[in-house]
Length: 142
Length: 365
Image (cartoon, rainbow over all chains, first blue to last red; front, side, top):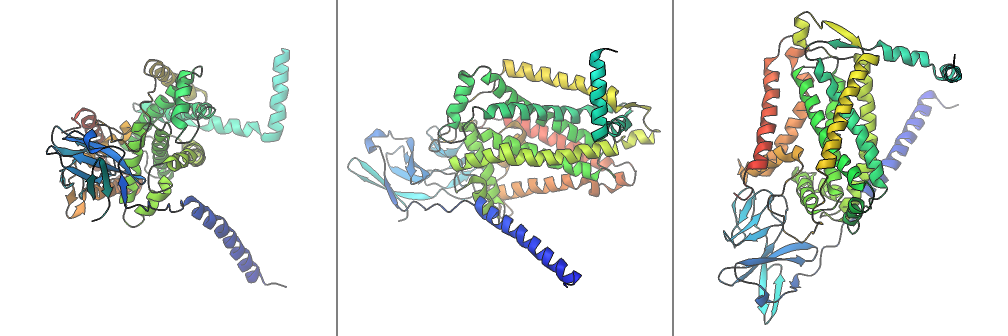
């Protein structure tokens, strides 16, 4: 005959096992699978250099992430990640003050992507821009 | 005796033999509501409950047309508002009732704080109440995204990004909340599941405990009134207080109907994950004071990123709010507690001022 202690032990471990067998798969189920990062390190933009006036900007797709291409008042092209480093709203270019600006919490970046005013703690990620004839190619890293 | 009366008497007897109606009646009649100069605040909890019932009813109606996907959500609401008969009314009532419910909930919370109704033996009533406030805000946050419009999209981007700020577990929490790294259709289905299934279930359970405790412990008489010799009398909960409650509910319904009819809920532009956040973007009004605080914090405070300080600060404030029954020792001992009265007033002033600034300060400055 099984002793009372052994019976209690068997009951409680199987109950514990049952709880774990339910909770673990449920927990894993709720964590989304890791999406493959966009492999491409560069993107050809769907518009030509001449489409953009100086002192303006366009948002473009860099894989699944938004980027911002700024044409400075002097006509130069610069590209950055468009996700604000504060709380990831998408930034815009303000021609009136020549800053990249985030409307969510009033964060300002200069045309080198540096955080110069407001809450953003770090600069925007900078991309390399190459203009070849009528194509603009933006690439990550140097 | 008329035939109807005979039949109803038979029904009552039949039910009484099976479920013991007499016991239920005794329970309902037992409760007395104290009458004193602050009794008016007792009606706010009932009003919040009424608006919650309106939310459940209109929410179920919305489910008949809503489609939870990034491609169809916005269009399904457009269809609901433009084509479905009274669709605009059902959605407007759902939206306004949510806002009014948060208003009555906040007034209920602050009146409980000022009347020190959290003191022993009502700590558990306070905990469940604060829990319900958290759930109401979670309802608001998840429901805000469901129309998949521009404002909702950015509010959710910022709101979930805030989770990522929490040290150590932040990144993990952010991914679980969004269903991935970004706010996408996966986030929408997740929020939908929370909004229509998980939160109602949890809220229903906690609400049950809250109401049970209110019924069991009765209404709290403010310590000030007790020191003056107690309430001047009391009235039975059934039917005297309940009928007065009913007047409160009807008032809430009238306000709700007027707001929904004259200021219908808007839909705005469809969310575009590749468009800049529009100038003047705002969260729901009850998140406005936190949003405005984050705007004023500098990039770094004592070497720590400003938003980390802000968000951990609000988290800490929430925990302290929950623990008030244990922190306010003077009230627990039955002594006057001016400090906690002033803390409450301070919180109200802070929320009102920051919310006001959020709506009036120039967003581009």
